[in-house]
Amino acid sequence: MFPTKILLAVDGSEESMRAARKATALSRGSGSELHVVYVEPVDIAGPEREIYPLETREDLFGTFGRFARERLDELTEEVRKSGGDITQAHAKVGRPDKEIVRLAEELGAELVVLGSRGFGTIRRALLGSVSTSVVRLAHCPVLVVRGDEVAEQDRAFTKILLAVDGSEESRAAADAAAEISEATAAELHLLFVMETAPLNPYAPYLGPEAWEVSADVLEKRNEKMRAFLRREAERVEAKGIEVEEAHLTSGVPAKEIVGAAEELGADLVVLGSRGLGAVKRALLGSVSDSVVCHAHCPVLVVRGRAQQTEEQPADVQARTAEVSPG
Image (tube, rainbow, N blue to C red; front, side):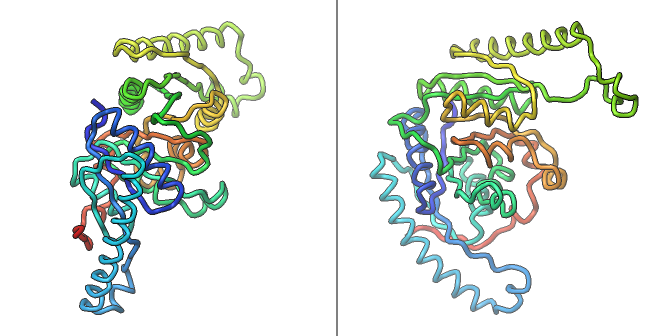
């Protein structure tokens, strides 16, 4: 059953508390363990590591460790008030994204849930966020709960939009969406986006007439896409989950996914993250990055373990200061 162990990252923000309510509802619906982590943000690296002597760094981490435990106690009490049955609480000191990813790995968590602090489109694009970093680095699916979510329901989700593309990651996302739909009794919608591009890749070099495509060719392509979407729906329904509707559209995938989610009134988008590699992802971005940044509702990004192993930087594996809750 997806998932069996949930790691909820909290920081006291409104978005964090929304994430806590979603994680609590998911935990109840799936019978999962619920772990909570708070990370006191401290990042002494580079020149600063040389400036501060070891004794000073240890004193700093000890002081911030006490802050972390105190704040964790406050936040876990808030989670319990929302109905959360917490299996274990963890206080950490360091860079939030790295500590969340490391703890998820150590616990064998099968889902990380966290809020996304709203900066607005331009600042999100320029500054990035902890949530974006965790999505890129975590070994398991990550649920990012946006602060501009409108509705609050007693159950975790009521309408799920699953974006499919036939990839291995997409199929893993479909499995996750089906199980969440079953656990929460949410409607499940499928979406496939045909990327807008000339059918002849050499068209720009061959003149305007190369862009012309016959209606017959277009219809054959569209029929293939409809058949693909039907197969994806049948695959989900074979698990005993009813697909409310399958949607076919064309355009820029991230933009179409975000637009369809808003039009449907979805309160969860689920999609796989295609591996580009760390450098290409940094240069080009990805569909999942864009959807996480721009969707109006929570987004669940599902990745494969092999992909994570290739992309995860070595420093994520290195040990940093860790504080055990008292």
